[in-house]
Length: 235
Image (cartoon, rainbow, N blue to C red; front, side, top):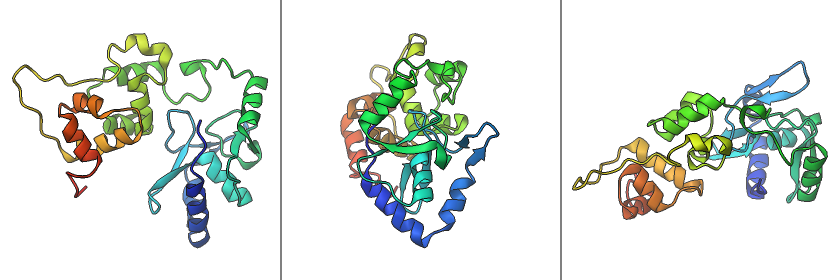
């Protein structure tokens, strides 16, 4: 888990001052359970945490960090928001506390999470083993799989690349599905959804120009031009 961009925190705080309805929009995505946790039901990343997207700012913030901001009005730079309940999607303010990286490591050790259970045995898992294996074998796009399973596109990418659900990777005979070109075939033309997907995948840092070219059956130069917005500038 990397330190979030503190610039986003400042932008969100400024936006909250003039847009108090943002809090209501956030809590529409929160389910309060009798066992005590308040679970964020919106998008989740590959790390298991919820993420709240703010379209006006064109950015997202970790749901538990946003909940802490709402409750306490401050989030000091360089500090993490940790969970007393050890439930990553939980956004209940009194289950959250501030800490350093060292605090986080100590907390992790004290709670026995250095060897966290894998896959469905992990309480923070938002997919089943069979769903993950379907993602492995599916020829659908990342966008389509994201919508189908209710997870973020970066989560889908992380699964396909083998960065998460590693205990099932022996079922994944290809770390990323590739559309091989027949000998002598010309490069395929792209549609707008594929262009948007290329840009998103590259932004995750998990895909290179080469791997995206192989995935979408286009040249590395084509991918580079798309990502740098030299082409397809209208989207």
